[in-house]
Length: 425
Image: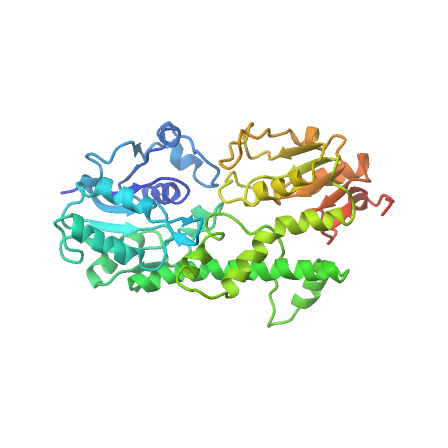
């Protein structure tokens, strides 16, 4: 009856790894996406972004991406929608992406199809989709169409492993939808766990928010430790060592589309301050904290400043919801002579949506030439070695290293300390 077993609508960092993984286990899957550059890359056998494990799969050209849903969605037994629900600026869930997709797909839905929502959504979104379908089509969910929320819980950079190792939650209001989704994802996941719409939605949000709060506590402790003149890394090491009731996280920038907004999907429905909002404030304050605390040790005004890393996460090329642009804006407020940004995972120039113009991406050696201070904004592999070389050539340079890539358990230090050089404090 159907030409394709699965059609994935939205083949970005969530949809493309899933599509390739399904093809890898013998599922006849295809995709639909509006991004021409992404389509051209995948259809030409190239990964459009960095995600280890998929180069050979995409090179096989077994997974094709189409520009239009015409003739594709209607000929697919299952349709997996991977567009998400971002936040408006007012801590309000933005349903426009899902609305646009549903509007575009409503004439393509066919009886007996399984519709799956995959990306993180706010509580109640799947119920909203059910009502939308029943208002705008002739189908009744649970009878004519099946609908399930099946959250992705993979971490960027390890999708290939985690799609095959993490349990898959399938949330629906009736058994037929849960069973159909479980049968599909059972081809990948080692365990299928079935529940209802709202529970599945909350599981995904609670997973992300709990990590967000944990990192906020780590950043708060880093601020407290510095205020008392203590070493956060030594304090953390002693607190965690062989103690069964403590697992303090490392401080660092807590960002990315999976963490930075999800607290708002819960907070939208509460009028009162709570720990979720406090965690957001702490994590968002971290860039300003680094600038303020480094300025207690060395001036930024009229100096040359380098920022190492621009992506939101180690060894990725994803800048979505990165806190580095925010860090750069705080540095700019101090009117340095020059701000040099370098990230070897990105092209030159860096196209950052909030910037008024493309950002020059310096070669790392050029960025560090004659610099006065350095901010380690992302913990990319290799930055520790680069800083050690800087310590040999320019030991007086001050470094703000919240990720501890220098490995000396200090957030603020002079580069020469990495190689045992004597420096003036």
